[in-house]
Image (cartoon, rainbow, N blue to C red; front, side, top):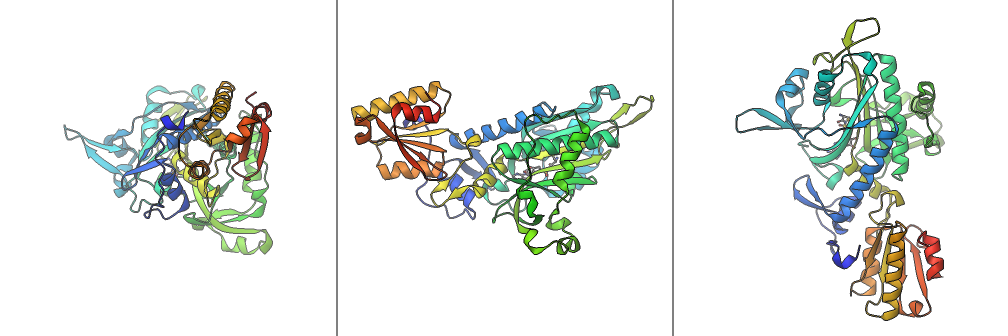
Length: 441
Ligand code: 5CA
C-alpha cells in the first residue's frame, strides 16, 4: 500500500480527552474516531489490526473445535424474558422498539439466542459436544465509557458457547477454551494470566478472567511470579485429550492469582514477599461455566444414553478484540508511539523513500515494494513529499515492526537501512541482503 493512496489521518497534537496512552496513540495514529460517547469508527489502519486480531482468535477457536456462526446484533426481548434476564440486566442493556412497538434490544451478549438455536435443532447426546461462536458487535450502555475502545459502549466480542451432556464433559469444554485462550493471547504477543473471577451478570459457579498486567489497568490484581515463566501449550496440543487439557489447566491455576473481588488476603499473606506480583490488570477475556442456568428455564433439553431428557450443560467464553488492541498498546509502546507485536501489526514493513523523485531512491523503493509484496509481506510505502523527520515520526508512531529506509546516498551505492522498531537496532545492507534478511528474496 502506498501511503499517498492510504487514509492515515495522523494527529500532531495529543488529544486532550484521552487519559491513557493506548487511547492517545490510537487517536494520534489515525486508528479510531469517536462518533458518540463510547462509540467508535475503525479507520483503515485500526481496521487492519482488528482483522488480524480477529483472525488469530478465529484460528485458535477453530483449532479447539468451536464452530463459527453469526448471530444478529438486534435481539428480541421475549427471548430474554424466558431466561429472566430482561429485567435483571438493568440500564446497561439498550432497549429499543420497532414500528410495531415490539420490544427489541441491542445484544450485550448472546447466551439466550444461542440457547434458542441449540434447542431448536439438538435433542440427543449423540450431537454433543458442541461449541458455537461468533465475532460480533455488542452494546452495553456503560455508566462511564472511557479509555477509548478499552471500555466502550459498542465493542467487538468473540463469544463462544459450549453445550455438553453433563458436568464432567462441560468441564472439559471449559478446559478446552481455557487452553485455546492461553494460545490465543500468546499469539497476540501478550502475556495474559488466568485469574479466578466474579461471574457477575452472566452467572455460574466457575469463571476465569484473562488479565494483561499494565499500570493503567482498571482493577488491582494479585498473582504469583511463577505465572511470568509458565510455558504456553504448543500448536500440537490435543483438544480431544480431556486428561491432558485438565493437567494444563491445573498447572495454570495452581499458583495464586486473583482479581480484587476474589482476593484471599490470608492465602496472599502466606506467600513470600519476593514471589508476589501485585499489579494492575486489564481483563481481555472471561470464561464462564454456568451449567443449566439458561438451559433449564429455556428448556434446552437433550436425551442421554439412558433415554432420559435433561437440561444441557453450558459455558460461555468471551474475548474483546477491540479491548485487546488497546491492551496490547498499553503493554507495548514507547515515547515515540506504538510497538506492534509482528502477529497483529497492520503492515509488516514500513518502506520510507527519503527523496521521492530521485531516480535511485525511486528505483530501489519500487523494487523493494514489488519483491516484498510478491513474497507475501504487507508493505506500507511512504512515497510522499514530506520532511524526513515527519516520515520517521509517523513510522515510529504507527509502530510497524520493521522500517526500510532508502536515502539518496545509500541508494546510489545500492544500499538500504533497516530499523527494527522494538529495539531501535539499525543495519545497512545491500538491496539483496536486505531482501534476504526480511524474507522477500
Ligand atoms: N457472555 C460472556 C462470555 S461470552 C460475556 O459477555 N463475558 S464478559 O462480559 O466478560 O465480556 C467478554 C469480554 O468482552 C471481556 O473479557 C472484554 O474483553 C470484552 N468487553 C466487555 N465489556 C467491554 C467494553 N465495555 N468495552 C470493550 N470490551 C469489553
